Length: 153
Image (cartoon, rainbow, N blue to C red; front, side, top):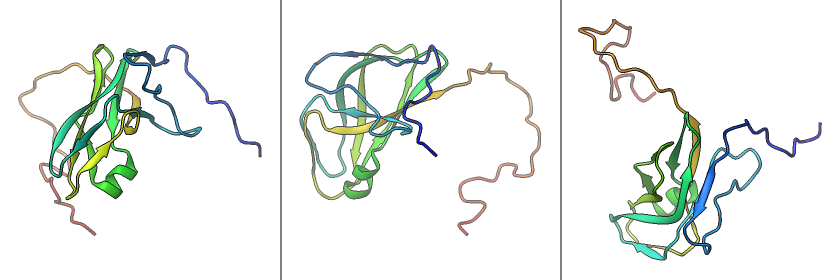
């Protein structure tokens, strides 16, 4: 069976990108069929242990209406260096520069070089629902059980 070499693209779902600095590579998929595009740093910085910073990407985006950009960790940075991405929802109406909130949960400082991949952005469809207040919610078998109520095994 021959591998498909072109990805199926839905019309009207293009991600428009404005680069604020041409020194930063455009976000891209590393491989065919990857779920998210890599975001790069527009600056050189160091994250100290237990420190949280916002890393500028040098990019503005126009996410299609009906979608959102979700910012996620790069698994290698998380697994090897304990660097995690926080606060990652980019709405379709946002037109400012994308900043990636990173936290160093490790015990060593972590250096970020300009144009290095710091996070991933996953473009996901969203369902905009109407908010309706009710006096009571329906009963379910789970009820109010949460936070580990089903155990670990």
